[in-house]
Length: 246
Image (cartoon, rainbow, N blue to C red; front, side, top):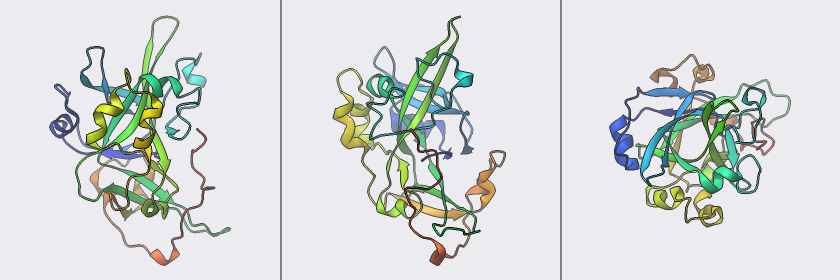
């Protein structure tokens, strides 16, 4: 599950990593939430890498009324190539989502516990920008209106992140950018190996306060580390109450 993330790198840093000729200026964003615009890198008709702003929450092309459709924030990588909601995008519109890291919440597994979920800021251990695997669609209305939307692919967590939650975003390494974005000659089955859990140690998890829970809290203070009693933390269960339906 990936329900919140952050992008605090500069536009110049994003352009350099993703090989973009042009990119519009944007401010640091510390608490990106569903329905908000997110930046995606994709391939245009001229076969160039471009930066596109889309609404976070994918709307499949076959939806009749987007306002009545449940937003698809994440797509399970194991089934994205076959699910009706994602298979078109998986075949034709794979993207990269630049991020500085993401947030996840650990829920104590003891039944009947009154303990609150603990929030974590999960970022690359070596710093810099991480690229999540994403999918993009353009919904066209009967009167010519268009909505660009997208979602983030998830996979089973590695052992490290599994101590917090059983799902994590798909990470695409720079060496695989070309293969991932090439939807003309590379089939979904050919990128399946790119959607495996990233290795342990790639991320570091930092315990933070519950300020991140509120979308209105959007400053760097939400990433400040706090002390927690790790003896109370247990590995997450596949039954964690997250939006893993898709």
